[in-house]
Length: 283
Ligand code: ZN
Image (cartoon, rainbow, N blue to C red; front, side):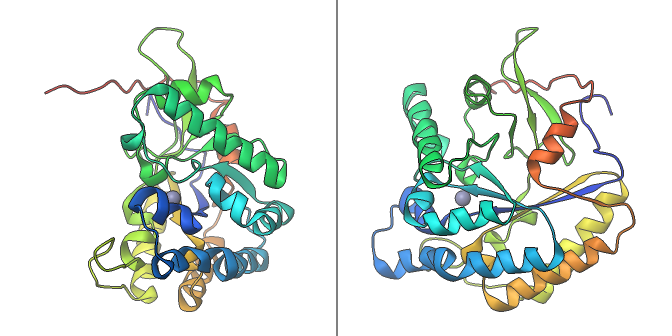
């Protein structure tokens, strides 16, 4: 392996994108209370259920938080920090790169999210996850410019690697912690007619089985099992129980490193890796 890193014996990172209303407003242009209440469940109920599960297992996690969530539920965001979890950046109103017409707009959104997190909880995050994993090619350079250590949103590996901000030798680089839709609770659980989902809502037992298979196979190779959950999705009762069972199974794996994303990125940053360059493809 020349361009990537196993953090050692395999690792698991539990991440929660605390989208609340921001995902529906920013990514789906929703305005009605029926839709937005789905997100509010995350801020009023789901977040505390998820935090209690993490407390029971003493597991450090990472919460990627849109600025709008921080402005709307500052007490919940302070609770996350108070219980010792990492807080990462997740846009302001959950804006993906596709909706950013130019670099100035993208940078303004990044700064607006930073200001909201500072206001709510006094935290300056080192990690970023693009809403809907919609990165732009200019994003890595923007993150490096503003002092971020890592991004978590690309899908070209299942181990961490160093991500170049441009093709020039000596260009700055950050750490990439890759993700995948198969390890996201959105696809199996999330359904809103005409907005997202197929209408088939998966059983938590099936989702747990799927995630367990990937966990065991991936960590056996020394890979990074990067789970992406949402408090308004997996904060539902039986889904939280399934998540708890997954943690039990993870803790039973000998030598598995259970860590927050910033801990993993900090470790990978010490390794002598050749940066990977992503350039626009043109057909
Ligand atoms: Zn999100």
